[in-house]
Image (tube, rainbow, N blue to C red; front, side):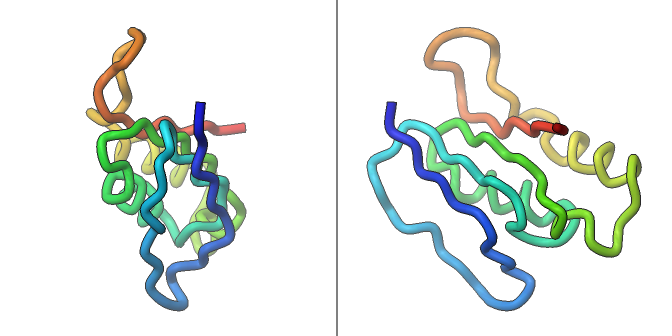
Length: 96
């Protein structure tokens, strides 16, 4: 399995385009952007691959727990893959 792992992008300070690489899964490992912006980027960057998203402290900057955790989950609704092999595109949020 090939992973494309990115973190600490802080897109609130500038744009970032995910480099095109041959990966089976994209891992967004925190501090991508503020609030639910990271989930939107996860959808954009998935390119048909599952995305594993772990919120970092930057996602929570200027937001409160548990409200943002609920908002992140709501933003990812409809993108989580079915629990079968080769499932459709999905964004998976990990809370811990």
